[in-house]
Image 1: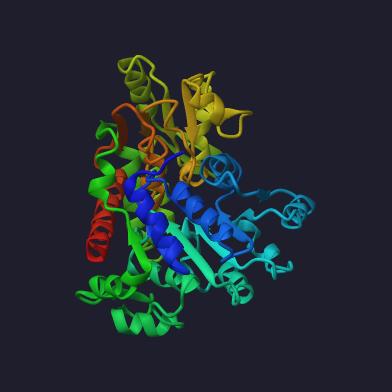
Image 2 (image 1 turned 60 degrees about the horizontal axis):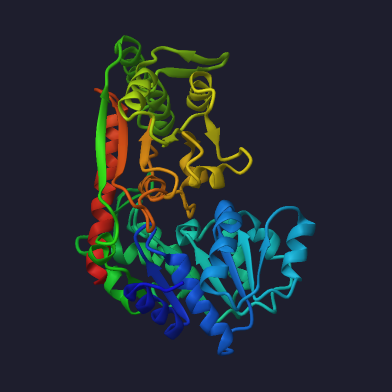
Length: 426
């Protein structure tokens, strides 16, 4: 396998920097780039063993598949599963040990003296320096000299997330204390709610400060290698009486400011036509699912990823489409990529990172949206990535005059922040 020119440059950057981050668009080949650099580092004796941390499905379905292509001279073991299975992988003598973020606290209790290089695949998983996983990991990797972070969503949910990601890679980049970072680059606008706002120009200052340790794959150069991504808003209408009453009741109860997340979740459920109650889901409208059937007919039932947020959405998909496949079904990914699966239902938290689904289809439907730009972009990137040969059609279902529109607008606002960050790093 041969890297593209810009991927070769990125691999060289990793080889030349013990502490480094690769910021790359979804599907740009971060795994291939990193494996190429890892093989060179191991071959030249600068590291003896790598630990790779990644989301679980990426551990099991991406790294073992990609390693023979890009690092054929290296041995790899996957430390996922039961404690005994993880222990066996860790003690296997393999040069690359791959484990998932949920195992960090278990890993922190193991003997990691033989690990002297680490890769954080989807670095945003460590954006919270106060989290238990971050603290446990930080305690045991003090002697690990080579640390590489990979992400396509560095600032997707705000500048504040940058601190933790930089600290776990190299605390000299933005300092050791988040409080000092916040004081320098943010203004406290609401003490009661701990609401901070970035100071004017702070994004550019932060990005300039971390630039020496950061490699950005140029989006323009990368996008030229992909077919177009065509995003279509699919507008839906429903009877608004129940929705408006619910919204009014929340406002009258004065819970919007205190419990905004709960409110918006309920309103998002109603936008999709149902509402969870103490006695189970109550269906109010089938407007999105009826429109989905029409869309599938219009597209002549082309193989399609269906993205849901709520279990009741998945339940309705199963009721309507008896041939529906989920990622939990045996061989789902392999069958999808062979073109044998017409409808594959995925949740962004399960399919949002690392999976290669570009060979099985080029249509994706968001029945409802995640609030996280990272999850949205990463989920789209399962199809719109290197190896895709067709235009990718992304259909976003929005119920008129509902919270759907607010979520969609929010994702656009966060996207602008990411674009500014990448520009500052050029």
